[in-house]
Amino acid sequence: MEKIFNLQQLINGIQLGSIYALISLGYTMVYGIVRLINFAHGDFFMIGAFAAYFTVVLSSAKGLNIPVFLVFLISMASGAGVAALANQVAYKPLRYKPRLSALITAIGVSMFIEYIFSALPFIGPSYRAFPNNQLIKSKIFEFGTFTLSNYAIIDVLVSIGLMLFLTYLVKYTKVGKAMRAVSQDKDAAKLMGIDIEKIIMITFIVGGAFAGAAGILTGISYPRIFPYMGILPGLKAFIAAVLGGIGNIPGAMLGSYIMGISETFATSYNSLLGEGIAFAILIIVLIFRPQGLLGETIAEKV
Amino acid sequence: MRLSRNLKLIFYALIFYLFIFLTHRFQILINDYLLHIINVSLIYVILTVSLNLINGFTGQFSIGHMGFAAVGAYISGILTTLIWKIQPNSIYNYILFIIAMIIGGISAMVIGYLIGLPTLRLRGDYLAIVTLGFGEIIRTIINNVDYVGGPRGLLGIPKFSNFTIIFVITLISVIVMRNIVYSTHGRAFKSIREDQIASELVGVNTTKYKVMIFTIGSFFAGIAGALLCHLLQIAHPTQFGFMGTILVLVMVYAGGMGSISGSIIAAFGLTFMSEGLRLVLRQLDEMTPTISIGIEWRMVVYSLLLILIMLFRTEGLMGKRELKILVPEEEER
Image (cartoon, chains in turn cyan, purple):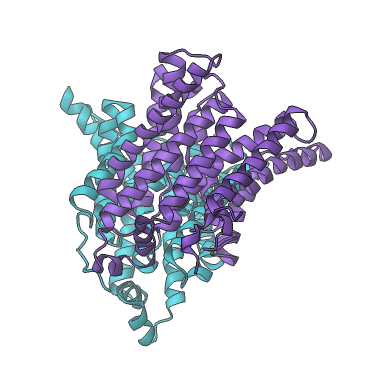
C-alpha cells in the first residue's frame, strides 16, 4: 500500500515540477544575464493564467470556440508582453545604478501588478474557477495502482517541449550564442558588436512567455486563480533555480523537479511540512552548497 | 550656556512630547484618532530605522523584517495575555509589560542570529530570498498553531502601549541606533556597504559585522512588534506578512538609505499619507456610486510610489544626509 501511494505522489510531483521548471527557467535566464532577481516573474505567471481565463470566458460568452493552441499563444504572448513592458519601463533605466535599486524596483513592479489586478473592479481579489473543462476535457486513466489524468500528461509534455525549444534556442542559434556571451561578460559582448539591450529584451520576452505558459498549465491542472497566485509558486521556482545553481538552465530544470517531487511527498505526509519544505531546502542548500547543485564556484573579482 | 547636542535632542524630543501630550489631554488640536496615528508612526520609526541599519547602512537586503516583528509581537503577547494574564492597572504590571517586550525582542534577536549566520556568509541576494522565505514560514507557523489563535490572530491583548511608553521607547531606540551608526562598529558597517572586498582587505570581519547588524535590527523589530500588538490589542498573521514589510521598505527607501532622519520623516509622512489616502478613497467611493473604489488602491499607490522613487530619486528624500541634531558633535567636519 505504501509503495502504490508513493508512485501516485511521484506522478503528482513530476506534474508540479514541470510547472515550476517553466517558471524557474525565466528566473534563471534573467538572473544569468542581468543579475537581477526578478520578483515580478511570479506575476507574469499569474497574468498568463488570467489571460487564458478571460479568453475562454469571453469567447464562450460570444459563442466562439477558440482552439486550445490559440489560448496557449495568447497566454504566452501576454506574459511576454508584460515582461517586456516591465523591462522597458522599470528595469532598463536602472541598469547601471546599484543592483539593490533594481531589486527593489522588481518588488515594486510585483506589488503593482498584484494590487492593480485585485483593485480593478472586473478582476478583484477573490478566487475564480478556471474553466479547465471548457478548454480541455478532463480524462482520467486508471492504471490499477495509480491514476493518470490527461492534464498531467499535457503539463509534462508542454513543459518538456518548451524546454527542448529553449535548449535549441540557447545552444544552436545566434541569439542563444549572444545570450551566453552577455551572461559571461557584458562589456566584452558589447565590444563584439552584440546589442546588449536587445538580448536582454529577448531574454525577458522568452522568460515571460514561459511564465505565461506555466500560468495556463496551472490554471488547467489546479483550477483556481486569483491575483496573488504568483507569489508562492514564484518563490518556490526561484528556490528551485537556486537549488540547481542560479543562472544555469539545466540546473533550473533539475531543481524544479526535485522541488516539485519533494513538495508533494512532504504535503502527503503533513500539509504544514509541505508549505515549509521549500524554505528548508533553501536553507540546507545555502549552508552546504551555496552555488547550487550544478553551479560552479566563481572566483570573486575585485 | 551651550547645551551639548545630545541634551538638545532630548530637549526637543521633550517639547514634542509635551506638546502632543498636553494638546491631547485638553483636546485642543489632537484627538484620539490623530494620537493613534502618531503612535503608529512612532512604532514605524523604530521599524524603519532598524531596517535602515540593515539595508541602508550595511547594504544588505532583508525583506522579512515584519517576520521579526511578528516574533516579538507574539512572544510578548503570549506572555502578557495567555501566561501572566495581566491587565494595565498598576505600575508593577507596566514593568512586567516592559519585561515581556524585552523577551520578545530577544527572541526575535535569537532567530535573527540563527537566520543570519548561514545566510550572511554568502554574497549577493541570498539574504533577500531567505528573509522572504522566513517571513512566509513564520506566517505559516502562526496560522497553524491554535494556541495563539491561528488565522484568527491573538485576541484580547491588553492595551499597554500608550503614547508615553511608545514615545520613550522610540526615543531610546533611535538614540541607541544612532550611537551604533556613529561608533567604531558603525564605520565597519558603512565600509561593508561601500565595498565589501576592500573592507575585508583592511581587516574588517565582514560576516561578523553583517550578522551583528542583522541581529540588532531584528531585536528592534521585535520591540516594535511588541509595542504594535499592545497598541492595536491584536496580533494577526496577515499584519506581519510581506505587505507589512513592503510598507517599511518603502519608508526606508523614500527617506533615504543610510539616513536616520530620512527614515523618521518618511515613517511619519507615509503613515499620515496612508491614513489620508484612506479618507480620500472613501470620499471617491461615495462620489461614484456606480463604481466601487476599494481600499486596494492604497497599495497600488504605495507600490507605484516605490517604483517612482527608485526610478527618479534612487537615493531617497534625504540621501545619506542627516539632520544636524542627530549627528554627534565629534563627527562633524
